[in-house]
Length: 361
Image (cartoon, one colour):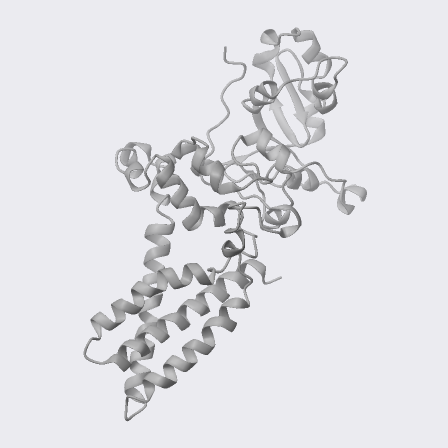
């Protein structure tokens, strides 16, 4: 049984419409029946005749919010399956700023803001692919219980890595969800490992310059002593900085955003459906690696302790580049160290820029 007409597929940039409360209330007949659940608007017209409790019960609440009646234990408390069926009927959001924000990523409803108190209701488009209408929505706290009940993806109150590994998610579903930003309570970090490794996954921004800049300065001074002029060491150091910039760009675009080719399927299915999926394996190994590399950053973009690279991970990833520098510049140990120091300085600048672009306010 198909209870509702399928909702429009979420595509990059696709916007679900907003409705005023009056518009919702006007759809109160068997020919056109809307209901709301919080800030979400559902067209349940096609489900009226299939409702187990009878269509009259739906029509009694046509054009109104059904939050309380669906939770009413005396009348009939609805199961999670009922909420899943309702989600298939989602057509938009109630057109008020507070409602748009509360609909952003699974949060509980919040009290009306001062604009509503002044009688000013602002209509804002909501993007179906992210569930958000503006940058400010990134900082709206996500209700883990409501988010998990709605999307059946990750429970933010439990370690994320085991859920990704054992979740059995398809690649398509995973990509839809991981690009739908959430904001953990209080701006803290959601648990990733849930064990002794947890501290190694979190790093305050100031640790990066405090730890690595003195080493860069020392290495630069030491390596510069192997030259008799200033131009040569400066040239090697700047080369390392430029080389890191190219490496970072390549890694970020072609590895961290490997899923971008998959996302294009939604826009150009006829031309990309055969080639795009191969870039990101549709198995738990590929999905888990993607989540650890960059997916968690898209999923929790305002996590201030996971916006810069942890020192332990940096050492592991930077060691091969140190070896590479000495292989390429085998003829001069000092030149290899200078190139490496310039690259590390570029990494520090990148991490600081990345952090402050997210938390400049």
